[in-house]
Image (cartoon, rainbow, N blue to C red):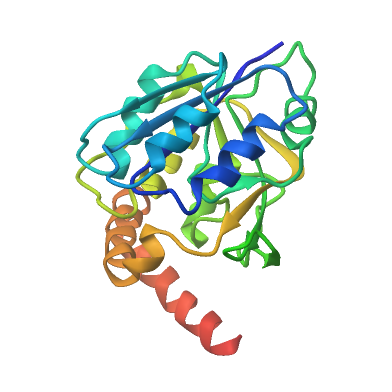
Length: 242
């Protein structure tokens, strides 16, 4: 059976981390490793981690250079076949989500990337709505010309495929990373499952303007200046129409 390494990076996450720890612990799929990299939190985050510590958990707490540096550290610590990045406050959609995901392809196959849908939840974990951008039936690296159609948390990669996040990007390095992963992938598998409950908040939400500027630069790098400019005109028209 293939092992899933669930990666959670934290900093002062005492208000949101507990439900993430609980969700990972309650998964019916037995082959899960939980890797937690904490950025030397000043609140009770580390106390929560210690309280939930078990044989399937690997964790450290030390200063880092930000979110993506912490993710790179965590990926280096992971030993599973696949990596899933689950932020503090986010959870799996249901207790059997990982089991269904890992059983959505034959044991003899080993896709490079697995993906699915994402539900948006409030601060109490209550369902609000499905993510506005819907995952395509067939995902390729060119799909993200239309935006990040698959949420980072519902984008699971084979560990041996992993390349580090580019630390030049502060807010949208996950977009660049996902495109690079898809360029490298030979087989991308649509699980056709809702995999994640995503907390309706986050660093890119809090820093929306800077994030969008970064994302534009990333899209121009991968898809070209002219194509990116034309797609953004379409984004504006789509937003006005909706």
